[in-house]
Image (cartoon, rainbow, N blue to C red; front, side, top):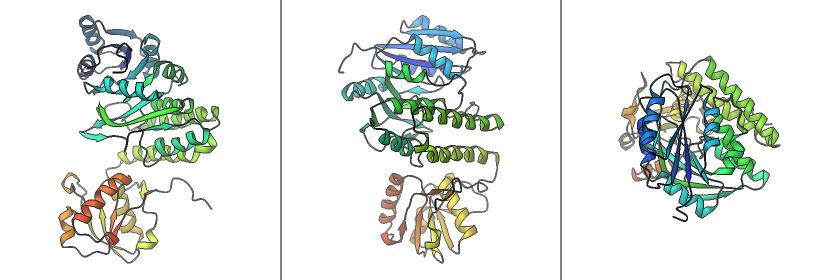
Length: 393
């Protein structure tokens, strides 16, 4: 380590998560970097979460517990920031957990780079989600900041998660910037704080390693699907607009934000429907160029599903097969999905790779070449978001 005397403060908001909070606390207490301050903010839990926090505080002097009336996530984090004594600050949600070396690795990297904060990857449902490469991003100029926001945060291929966890910040930097997040922002508060950090920062280190284990809970407030949640998305857009207008950025990135917000709305609305094909989020942008062709669609996720809808409904093409390497994990009634081995016997003109990210498309391209598919028959282009913004003249 560059400096093992530096204290790292880790803030964990806690609210009615008695099933998960012990695993979270234990994963942090077991960190290989020992000079840590663990701040548990019990935000008025009505289950045994607060008692569990007190139990761990009695066993480990590095742990302190703040009990408060329920005031929401933003206020809980701000309360934790007031108590944070470290030179560096990290955040963990109380229903998640982290790898043993997370804060040792992040501390080493932020000290070496002197970045304002370091961003790393995470695991969700055993899937590793990481930045595509390790690099330091210098964002001192206004135009550079705007382009970074559009591509890295709001873009279809965004490579920085809009989360405050999976990161480590310089203490004064995050204290100053998080104070600007509205207390009532219970949806999108991480995104708002991240945008503020980018606007106020000069450098960010991207680390293509994952240490954080995110637990996707269907019963969480974020994952609820109801009118209130949709209303919160609009409030998030309003708060973002205000923040970016304060920094004279809004006009530079407003189209990207609108598209980002609309994608979130479409995702929420689509959950209401049992017909996964009803609401399309993506479309293949050059449909006129594949007219009259025999098409294999490769990829059965959201992009593949939307391409199937688009091509089968609106183009004069013959979908020879819909293929995915993990075809057995999808269940689309009345539609046959094939494994990659089907390419050995099919006759086709084109294989349309239906994924969002170029890195994944490159990986699939290599698989197809190994299956002796003619490289001239393989197509991938970045999917266009479907009907969200008007076309420019």
